Length: 306
Image (tube, rainbow, N blue to C red; front, side):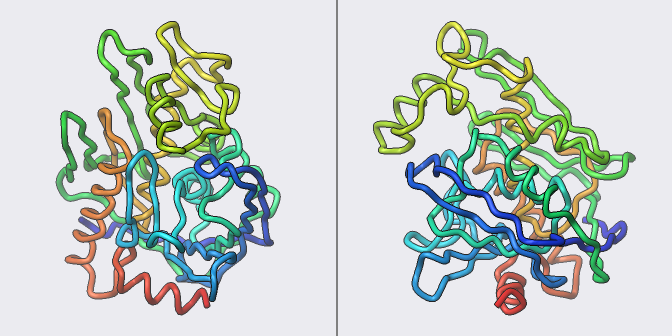
């Protein structure tokens, strides 16, 4: 990895609050996004647990990636963090205390649009400290089971993310691709409103596990043999766009900015987080200071957030 520059860090200008129902538990939950000092990073704090345990949003603190990204241990961790993290990363909110009174942020409509609106209402301010921007010297790849996600060098500035969604020729979701190009406002306009999707078979399996039993096809996108059930797409390629949203949220766990081209084929949270861990490890080898994405950097962030 190559350090190619810096930019000023940013935080919220005021508190922002979002309330709703958790997708996993079905319980009411409130999340408050609060400004934080430079170098804090994004830190989740469970206000409903004794001593309000905090967990940094860094790849080294991920404990589960089955169907969603979970930070911290069972009982005091936070699950389904990727949509909220995508909103913060997409709007370049680098330092933020995320306080919530439950084990997950509100699911809202399955997208990041509600969080983007809350951040926009609160406003964002620039801070004096700088945030590093890292680029790959050579492709960095994570792959498993026919899926892959790779980070490639690119002459373009900023981060470009491409996703190829492929359920096969007879799959319920048509093959599609989408690329998020770097640029002001692109995340909010093209990706933030794209919703979580599942196949009808996946929805049945989740309900059997006790997850999302309160949800209906009107609450997210469910694909049956004939297409979307009981809902309408916001974009023809909304599933591929949502996969890009997930990637932005999962790669935010690096804790630093990326410049290059991420290309993903059928990847999910497990591979996304594996790539974030690889990038954090490569940056740690190139930097004499504690690097975001690692537990040593996470402990420093907790001290600043206290």
